[in-house]
Image 1: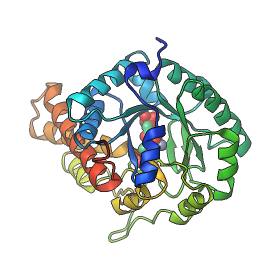
Image 2: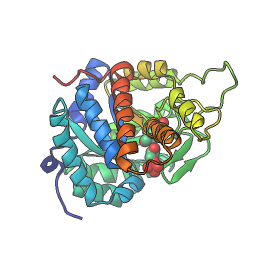
Image 3: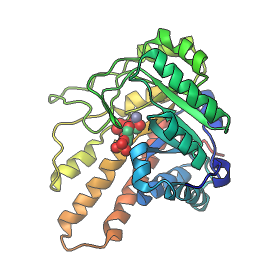
Length: 326
Ligand code: G3H
Ligand code: 13P
Ligand code: ZN
């Protein structure tokens, strides 16, 4: 693994992005990726919509891509952005970092931002691990996200069967003791494509905006992060089911709720599942309609186009991040 600082790759940390998002009341998109087509789509979609962007990988996505390959992809993403519309600021972020060693490796290899997710530990252990990462990260100009409260669903290798909402009364002490730059909270979102099973005509339960507001009033101006924020787009789920897939009765976070969150202290919104669904839907359609097709460019190319459209839609109509880079 080559040691390099993120500035050598043309990346930025999240500080200025979040300051702007807080002041102008929008949320910076944080899209997960695992491969070249996903990364290209995210960067092209954000450059075309003049949106700052956080490109993020989980520990397992980093291993899948390859630890040496990944920084080159990030550097290429910076070049691609300026070729595709606007030289939008790009942060490379570790999503759900599970240990100090992983966070340190990422920082040493060119990440500009890391999450240390110790939310499933006791408050004291969460503070201790987060603090250790903050000390190392800040020494390298890298920003740190931590989490208080646990989301339902799978958090990388950590499985949380039930969520526990963030307790607002713990937030101020946590921020003070750790020096972290942003905080992921649990207010009713969850990871994955199967967030809610609804009866016909039923709506997903609303997010706990009362908790978000309580946190905002206790730590005004502090950047909050929302994980598990995919909407599980009906159009893509239906397309998957129409072309041989099977995703029964599933729903995500309604766009209206995300709009409201993005206009609050929420400065970063994490989206992974919706991107996976968009690509899978198109690939399934092509395989069903053209069973003889075997050139990856012929199905990954259209899948990439679908993801570009999804990114532009979210940036402009959900997160409000479009047009923020002048
Ligand atoms: O929150 C986790 C992300 O959605 C990615 O997880 O890359 O380990 O599947 P994964
Ligand atoms: P979704 O599964 O809702 O896309 O959430 C992704 C996420 O929180 C990544 O950290
Ligand atoms: Zn997450």
